[in-house]
Amino acid sequence: MNEIIQLKITLERTEPPIWRRILVHKDTTFLDLHHIIQIAMGWWNYHMFEFRLREHFFGIPHPDFENMDTVDYAGDFSLEMIFSEGEKFLYEYDFGDGWIHLVEAEKFLPKEAGKKYPVCIDGRLNCPHEDCGGIITY
Image (tube, rainbow, N blue to C red; front, side, top):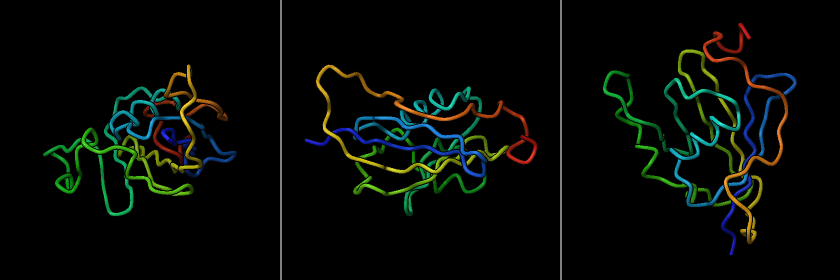
């Protein structure tokens, strides 16, 4: 049974690209994925976030932000919504600096006995510092 999804997370507009490859359970919620990405990329979880998968938006709705009424709570939805290898979606962290990540479901894999998930299996380069002003000032 395929229970693991291999995801490649690339911080957009970086050259050379800053990226990570992780393995997660398919029942991982988008809220949990947010925390996994924070750790894998080296962010400090200071800011709001949002996932955009097809017509769905997942995050933590906040009444003080415009358009947040269209955002579903990220803890209520899991990666089981990803149906095929190659499917892509966006993750934005820190709406002020606008760190946009492309997340690609590279492979569906069987769970390996004795292996602990989630796990970061590959990557390249350090992430920019928190609150540095976005890609233009980085």
